[in-house]
Image (cartoon, rainbow, N blue to C red):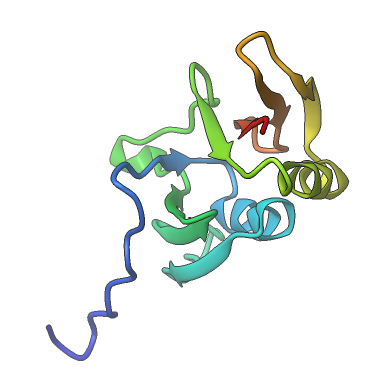
Length: 138
């Protein structure tokens, strides 16, 4: 490792979602507010305000973000076909839910006890990403 290589941030969990969003730096700031994210690493934005990598920790897991770089074959595509699910304790889910809604997430499915017996709800963030919250009812 040379003096120009930053230290690696610890990757949490066994599967890491890596999202390409339109405005990764703004998304990271939003995720701090909405989901209590901790930014553990970020490459500085380029002259167009884009970043190639942001590493976050949320609820004991890693989430990575980047902006689109169409000139390198990576155009922006709207989020579709997936949901990021937060597994929470039943005594914490209400606070997580309210924080996300207060930050600006749009409620898709209100938080409620579902047919499988857990409390579950879904929100969409301003970047088009679907988030669900799930807690076992004790």
